[in-house]
Length: 188
Image (cartoon, rainbow, N blue to C red):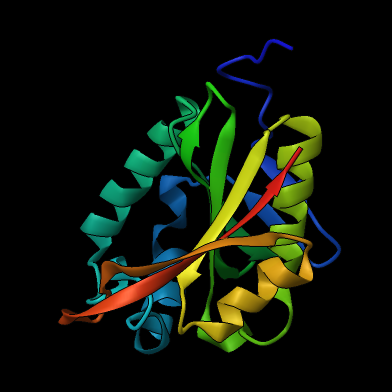
């Protein structure tokens, strides 16, 4: 089987309750609001969530994310409510290797929307898209071993726990603490 290095990747997806679409610079204010409101919860898990980013930095980030999407280096989607009026979070395929092909699904949900099953809904949609339409041979989800909420998602979606990497990384919120990383996968 031959794989294209740039498969037909949709710019947007719909689930029962959500609209996923590729980043656009016009998302800057909505993204800032969702991210900044969630920093207290995200800091523990995400290196990029240690401090707020100004509007100019957010626009730069979005331009880079849109360029990476266009070149298929990183496929970030912003997760909006079904009406497209509020960003609920972000997800996508990261650490892509088109030679296999494989990728890692990452996700975060804004604090006001946490606990409503959105991360699971998004991850289920991206898993189906990745395995069925994009023909990934391997999808991974990685999370801090202490992040039990995040670890429940791959387990609920039929991912297998491949490994626990002990002392794998520096804790996102504390440069003197090490963390373990869980690696889950689905393969075809």
